[in-house]
Figure (tube, rainbow, N blue to C red):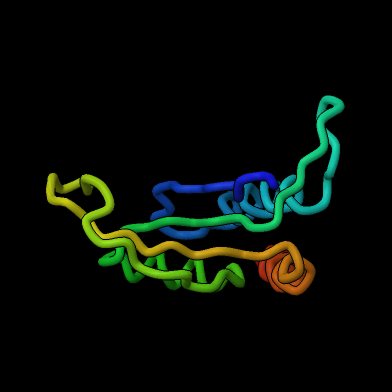
Length: 109
């Protein structure tokens, strides 16, 4: 079984450009099953952010992702402390509804 696609980034806010990039990446993970002759078997796309970053957590949830859990003392944070990480996922079966919602947000600008 393939590992989940793991995404982590510094999304200050999901601007229209950032939404287009997320849309393209999720489409590639869930729709385009063949790249360079390889078959992707992506069952889940995972997002990770600092537990304290409420803005990023809300943005990830607006993509249609579900909180999987909090991993305590997961890694160093940008401020030099050790952070707890919030992990989210979007399952392959959830992608059609999330894609529709994301398309509507992109169309609205």
